[in-house]
Length: 220
Image 1 (tube, helix red, strand yellow):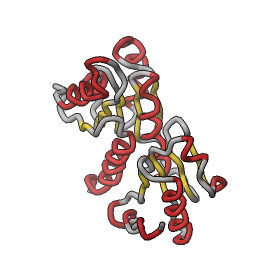
Image 2 (tube, rainbow, N blue to C red; image 1 turned 120 degrees about the horizontal axis):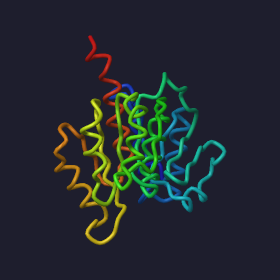
Image 3 (spheres, helix red, strand yellow; image 1 turned 45 degrees about the vertical axis):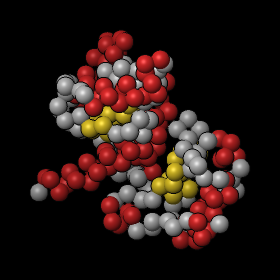
Image 4 (cartoon, one colour; image 1 turned 30 degrees about the vertical axis):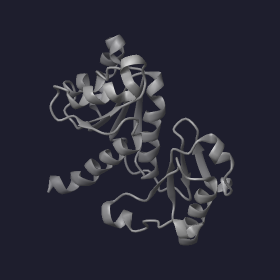
């Protein structure tokens, strides 16, 4: 089974982010083989899109920190948190929480805290305006929104830092599994909004990490 896997143990040194394993489409046996390889190297791993049924079939569960909401798992020892939270993770609605949690867990795996702001979408703008001072205290915002995905555009006109929009597959009918949300944020009139793929909380957190890593170099 291990001959099917080539792990990238040099990724941290090369780009500042460690190897992550996308578990959808992999069998439990393949995932166990991957964990065995990581264990032999003494390397931690971030597992994404690991559904509860597949997690239940894994060995080494005593070495795995699993979150069923985000479908993420940490294998091995976590690095300590570095400094205060620099990233605000905003979920427009409760249905967007799994994507927000995936972003939160990805940042935590890499040693960065974040602050979650949940259910503050445009259907009740008072919920957003009440939290603006707290949002502005964070230099980076990840915004997960489905349906019409209006929230990233709204925040793009209110916050000065990078906005990373995550269109989600929340919605029905013309929402088309998140494609309407994706098109909406790509067509946003708010300048400079960065867009990642549908439901890609991991990708949004990775983009935030690149901003964090670049900041000290830009300050020179």
